[in-house]
Image (tube, rainbow, N blue to C red; front, side, top):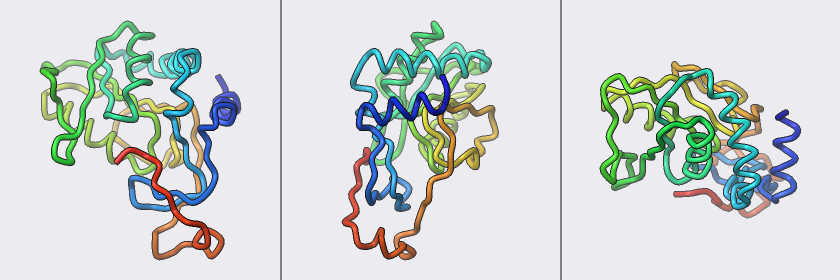
Length: 188
């Protein structure tokens, strides 16, 4: 699946938003990928999951872990496509943790799946969780890399879409963006 084909899915599903957005990182942007809108249709989940699994197969992981909430749907589908176990990390008092009895065994080969990365904070938190439990992160795969490859997790990385979007600090907004009310559409 090409980057243009993936972008077309986002456009067709209304998941590529234009406007003034505040990202989880606190940065502002003109574009926002609302993956949940694309991933509400199971044929789209299967198609994107298959493409991401094809890219991630090289990481040879037996377990897929995703940070909740954004990575849940695509993480489970990639795990299904790879025939791997699926677990997730979720927030507890503002910090990601393994809950619900999920365990990672020492040396367990683990793949991290996320929907979108900009600075990669949630992915890094998930890497730290896997390592704290003695697991081995074989790679990270995401649908959208908004950093155009600038994020570096110290492990192999793959994405379906990779490009640099304009990002702005709150006190450095261009006039056209400052004139538009900002919304924070993502998970908190």
